[in-house]
Image (tube, rainbow, N blue to C red; front, side):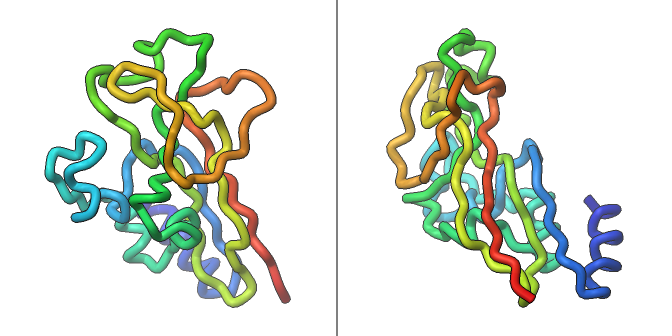
Length: 164
């Protein structure tokens, strides 16, 4: 991520729009906070997760948290996604735990030409919780797949408004 930040700094200094997205396989320091320390098997922990924090410290914004700062009502879980055709134990690393987390992101460097217009979770509403298939009951908005979801992660779909 340090290499990305060094390259991104050059683009930012030239006034270019910089967006980074993908599967980071790491939760966010914006989600492991005082309000969630006793939820989702966090076991009382408040964790300053490395990569999202590095991006935050470099001035990047987490598009999901820009749109939905309320972590309790909009947890935005992207892992582990349910797939009814796959055995639960193949969709989770810790089947006895509630390992739901937001580990897939879209980050952007704030720019006067760029505005987050909309954000949805792309994938099934179902997750794996303590070895069981459960439908999310949060206020998160989902864009549901037309067929079977092919992966254990959900995606984050961001619509940006670009102006001149």
